[in-house]
Structure formats: C-alpha cells, structure tokens
Amino acid sequence: MKRLVPLLLFTLLFACKNHSETKRIKGDLNYIPVTMESEQIIAGLYLTADIQTQELRADIDLSNPGSDVLTISEIEIATAAGLRSLPLTGSTGPIVLKPGENKSLSLKFQPLNDLKTNQLTGRNGYFKSLYNLVINYKTKDNKPATPKDYSQDQHSGSAPTVTSMTTALAPDDYKAYLKKYQVTANSYSFNTSSDFTKKQQAYLSGIKQVKQPPFVYVSAQEIAVSGVNFKLRSYQERDTLNAEIFIVNHSGFPLKINKDNLDISYTDESPSVHLNEAITVEKISGSKQDLYTLEKGDRVLIRLKKPFKTKAEKVILSFNKVFEFNNQTPLFNDNIELVKVNLP
Image 1 (cartoon, rainbow, N blue to C red):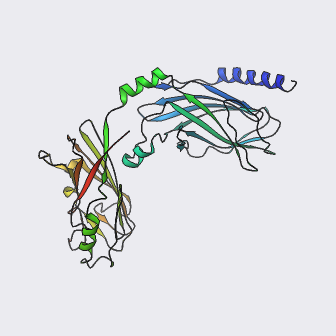
Image 2 (cartoon, rainbow, N blue to C red; image 1 turned 90 degrees about the horizontal axis):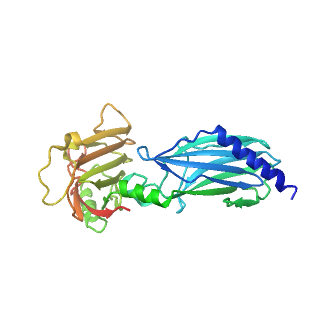
Image 3 (cartoon, one colour; image 1 turned 90 degrees about the vertical axis):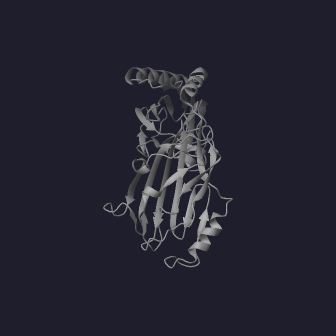
C-alpha cells in the first residue's frame, strides 16, 4: 500500500503538469485520449488525423516512475491487423528518461492502413477507427513489467519490453468520415492466366540482344523480362485512371522508351485526346540528361493519368511499341491484358 500512494500521487502530478504544458492541436479526426501506466513507464496519447496529408499526429507524454533509467528504443503506430508504421522522421530512439523524468513529444505518421490497397495502388488506404501506439523500452536491469489499465507488456529475457495502448474514434465520427470520403474504386493487375508468358518467351528466343534461353515471369503486379523488371500500380475512381509503372534495368542491353505509344485502354473506348501531356517519365537513377534511355542499372518511373469511364473487367496495357532495343526491335511482341481488382 505504501508503494501505491506515492505512485498515484506522481501519476496525478504528471497528468496535471503535462495537461497544462502540452498544447493539443485538433485535427480533422480526433481520437479518444488514452493513458497507460506500469511500474516502469507512464504514457499518455492524444492522436489526430489530417485528411489532406494522410498523416496521423501523435502527441505523447512519457514519464519514468521507477527507480532505474528508462530507455525507449522505438515508437510505432499499428493497426488492429498488426500493420506497423514508423514515424516520418524514422526511428525515434533512443529516448532516455532518468527516474522521475518526464518528456513530451509529437510524432507524425503516414500509417499503412490496408496492405492490399498499398500493393495495388501505392496508397495507404483509409484511416482506421482504431490504432495502437507501440512502445519498445528497457530499464537498467530490465525487470519484468507490471502492467496496469491499457498496457499490454510482453517481456522475454534481455529483449526490450513491448507495451501498447489503444485509441479509437467515436463510432459516429468514423461513420461520418467514411460517408464523406470513401469512394468506389478499383485497380488493375496483370492477367497471369493468359498465354502472354509463353508467347513472349518464344518471341525473345529470336532476339540476339537477349541472353538465351530468355526469362519471362508475370505475377499480379510485376513482369520480369530477361533482366528488365516492371511493377504496375494503379487506381481508378470518379472516372479517372491513375497508373504508375516502375522499371529497373538489370540486363546487359539498353532500351529506348517511346512514351507516346503507352496507353491503357478498353474495348469501345472513344478516341482519347493525345496522351503526351498525360504521361510523364521520371529518371530515379541514371543519366538525367536522357530520360528516354534505360541503361543497365537505371530506374525509371512512368506515370499515366487519363479519363477512364468503363466497368469492363479486362482492359489492355499497350506495351509492345513502348520499349525498344537500339535497332528499334520491340522488347515486347504483344500487349498485355489487365484484370480489374476491386479495392476495399
């Protein structure tokens, strides 16, 4: 009982002190503030969301109520499904608190909310109604923690203790957020059940620049062709298609890019305006003077944005005249079919 009284008094003083010192900034979404405490750490969390930047802001109050030095090695935000994200600034550690010491900090996150959406589109998905703040820490002798209230401490040997606390949006607030911002959207993946791979291998077997036998691999989002790798990300919403193709050349041959020949189209599509201004090419690595040549080791990102009013389950990615060897021989013999994937 003697132990609980000073700990309780310290906790109340800590809460009052930080309440007056920490200025809370309201966001577009404001999660319910929470606190947790153990014999080794006391923490408070105020979480808000910025819809335009797709960022979470975590205002965190930390205190060391114990008799040993407390070292916090990492702070992450996590979804209920276990998808973890580090702060935008990277690692937060180490944060060292002496016995009785307090510290307040603000961290920004761009949380990975939905893995499928991220893999297909490159976007992180809609904010979740619930998040966990995960704190990894150690004390000098790393004694097992005694969790209270919201904490969920896990201790094993000399490994850091992991504690977390859960914050949630009021149900009505989350419902209103989804009603205002959630829209029907879909993405596209390569059709892995077509005969594209077989035909492309046969075509490349007659190309002298390609090391024989040729290698061709197609997955839902990637194509590998004898050392040249292509990764597709796309999303279609409100009658507009956005697509990105990330290309890395690991092969021994250079390629020319003819961006004007690139398109994603569907049957019965009305003739579209020229896509020249709708397609951009960015050289991620390699010579920036020649954007349209892919030498070995070069990385390029091609972006396409166009009106796209269709409910078709399959569309066509025009590829066969986009990439060429130095003698103007196309890298691809055929275009490739894409299949629609509904997004969460």
